[in-house]
Structure formats: structure tokens, C-alpha cells
Length: 382
Image (cartoon, rainbow, N blue to C red; front, side, top):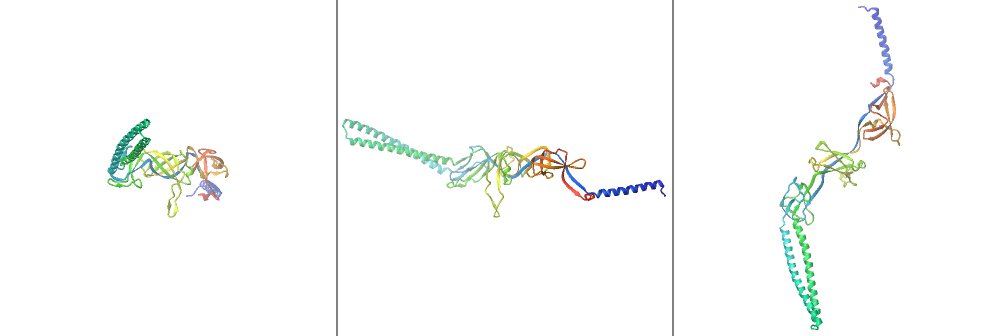
């Protein structure tokens, strides 16, 4: 079928236009071009934290020891029991201690009886001394008899004082023996939970050289976190700084607290394979544990919040460059709607590892250039 002249003209025009368009496109794609990768500025949160591993321990605890030697005859508690202050925990065989107390009381009674006798002797000596003085005044007795009576009175009074001192010494010793007898019954020094028991009924303890450990009691209503912060970050930790943490077994729950204490010296350095391990400093903070969710010995992952800002214009630090080494101002490049770029001076505020708060120079919605790529031919970017 033959094309008409009009159809031939249309096809010719189409081929010419296609050739011109292809040539223009080839020319356009051969031109150099600069491609920008941008990010639209938006509001967000800024937060810089120091991470540390810690351990949960009771804020208040006490190791209950034994002050006397003897056999454990009775244990009244078990691990996990809740005890009140002054509650009886254990008993030690007190037969020997009771015998010592009985002997001391008997000796004290004997000394008091002897004191009565010596006081009677002293009274008699005093009467004789007064009688001799009267007779000597009448010239009825020689001076020698008076001197003898005075000496006898002095001796009697000295014996009374000696017995009084012996009684005081015996009373002091008896008081110590009674205290040791009381130590055979061990009472809780504080209210709390029994964590561990180190002895068994029937076990004999020797307290002559050191105080044997009996059990440990702790108040679990408030727990203390002992976090270990590296020496590179410890200078950023301050008293009262907010901190949050999770436990390895309950990562879905976050506890919040504040720094209570920063220990001024690191724990004793440990050695491994002949080399010193990394130096860390201990940071302490407390948390309420009224629901008993935390247990002693748990491992925590703590984050100390150094700085934070909510709902602020946040820019990636990688897209900003310092104006000069001594300046607090930064420079940012913005892609304008017409395709050109503009450099702006930016003032920053709080920042974390990746972003910074923009105080001036940029607005939400600005297209911040984060990378630039130049191509000798546009088609090389495809």
C-alpha cells in the first residue's frame, strides 16, 4: 500500500525531530554535572549518653557474725525469709557460758559477804580506837595502846577498800560474762531479707581469732547500682545527672534514677594474662525496688544522660564543617528550589554523636547537602 504525500511529509518531520532530539539529548548528557545528596531538616531529639555496665546490690545490708565460740544448736531462719529488727536468728550452745556466769555470781556473793565481815571489823576497830583515846585523855592508858588501836583501824579500813575493789572487778567481769552469754543468741540488727546463711545446725564455730560469718541480711526495698564507667568518660559524669538502665533479663523495662556518688578512685586493678585491665571508676545510684523486680547480683546496662533536647531542629554533624579552628560557628550548604546551592553560617547547641541542635542559620524543611558528586558527563551518573 502506497503512502500519500501527506503521510510521507509527516514521517519525514518525525524522523527529523527524532534526530534533532537525539542529538540534543546526547549533547545534554555529555555535559558535566554536579549531583547533590540532601536531607530535609526536621525536628527531633538530641541525646548524648555515657554507657556503662553495672551490678545490682542492696543499698543497706549487714553481715551477721558470731562473737562467741560454740556449737550452733538452732537456726530460726532460712534464705529468703523476711525478718524484723531484733528477731531471733540463731542460738549457740550456752552451757559453758552459763556456768561461767553462775560462778561469777557466786564469787560476787561471797565477796559481798566478806565485805560485811570486814565492815564489822572496821566498825569494831573504830570503837576501840575512840575508847583508847578517851582513856588516854584521862591518863588511864599508855600512848602505845592508842597507837595500836589507830593502826588496827587503818588496817580494817584498808581491808574494806580492798574487798570493795575486788567486788567492783568481779562485777565488771560478771558483766562481760553475761554479755558473752547473751551473744549465744543472735538477733537481727536490722529489718530485711535473709540473703545467705553460711552455717548449719550442729556446726561448731571458733570466734577466738576472727568473727565467723553466720548470715547476711539486706533491705531489698531500695537497691543500689554500682556502675563501672571507663576512664575516658568519667569526666563527663556529674552528681544528680539523670541515668536510666535495663537488666539483661528484663530489657523491656527501663528504670530511671540520678547519680548519687562518683567514687574518687578506681577499684583495685585486676590483672589478666600479665597485663592490666582497663581502668574504670565506680558510679553509684539508687532505685526503688518496692515491687522486688531487682535482685542482688543482676547485671545492668546503664546510660548516663550527659545532655538532651526534645523537639528541636536537628542537623547531622557529618554535613557541617567548622568555620575556623577557633570558632564556634559552623558552615552548611543548602540546596535551593532553583537547583543552586547556598552556604549558610550555623550556630549549634547541644549535640550527640551524630546530630546537633540548630540554634540559628537553618530551618525545618531546608534541604541540607550531605554529599556532593561531580561527573564529567551527566550520563555517567546514571
